[in-house]
Image (cartoon, rainbow, N blue to C red):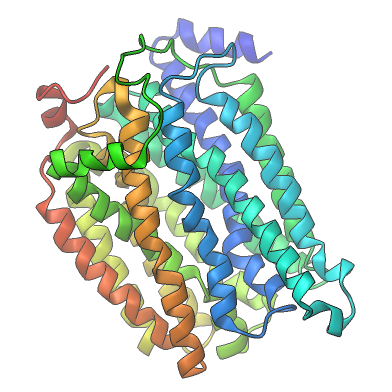
Amino acid sequence: MGARVRSWFRENGKGYRHFDMVTMALVGAGINAIEFISSNMIPITMRHFFDSRLMISIIQDLNRVFGFVVQPYVATRGDTLRTRFGRRRPFYMIGLPLTVFFMLLLGSSPHVFTNEILRHSLPVLALLFFLNVLMQASQDISCGTEGPLYAELFPQKVLGRANSLRPIAGSVVQLIMFIGAMKLAMKDEFYPYLCSAGLAAFGLSIVVFAIREKPAPPRTSAQAEAYSVVKHARMLIDNREYLKIAIVGSVGLAMPAAFGLFLSLFATETLHLSKEAYGQAAWVGPVIVLVAALPAGWLADRVGAKNVIALAFSIQLIAALSIMFFAKDAFTLRIVIGVNAFGGAFQGVAMLPLIFLHAPAEDRGKVFGLIQFVRAFAATVVSPLIGLIADLTEGYRAGYSICVGLALIGIVAALLTRGGRPAEGAAAGAVGD
């Protein structure tokens, strides 16, 4: 069935490209379901075991740690890997099943360890920490191949629009999770984990049966070198554009991490909302992304990714100030989440075109891995800092001052980045296709 559908799209010219856009978006939706658990359910689950907010923030920070350990290796290794499944898809086939397995183990932990004394014992805490390490490392196997695969499937001139479908599919998933799964969490906190596992399994089926990679370009002697952080880091010195894009990417990764780190706990502990009420307040975020993603992709392709990202950080700056001084109930929290989601949609859609604007076709994975290493490493510092602020102030509002600072840095760095419309990068010979 999948082969007949692909054949029909191929016979209808550009329709096949649109088919690839949809299938990649559906895979991203499965990954987004796991991201939802990491951002919204892991902190709630960990509160059954850990009293310290700093410890929870460190556990959450593992998302970024493996972003700069696993993803750069996977992205770079994909440049040279040759298998009958392609060079990028095998990483999905390994990463997604492992992620789901460890995620379900984490979600079931409150049912397994019911004794309060046992829950706070060192062996149990160490086990949960280890399970989260394995979950995040497995997830980054998939995330490390997603960006380069996008750049190989779509020309630079439509990469913004192709990438815009991913947050649209992701926002549908988040609506399902916020409205449905978070309501089920009132009965049992394990239900959202099960919903996420089902969506991730659907994404894996798309990888196996629907996505087909383009033939890989010939290997070069430079690609044959073993992955080395030190050698690849020299690219930041040799190419200042990579450095500026890495700074923009660092802020782009740190902003959602900082804003969402304690959002569920801010809602349930500071504003005293139930999990269901929090879900009802937070569903506006995916709706905003659903509306804003396509215009963001169109703008990134027309006026340049860096200009869209600078605008996005300005909007997120307003959201960060608002949650510090404005949010006081479900209604005002919904407004703040909506504003932040609007900025996040623009930033998330435009980031991929900016990363690959100056990347040679044969080294896309290496460039993506390099920038991912820098931005994930920088984002790693944010979560413990916010956790420490939360412990010192015994609350969550003050931590959003970090978001204010990040937004200001992001605006300046984006405006200093060279290159506007994708055509400029292509004219310079930096982009393949």
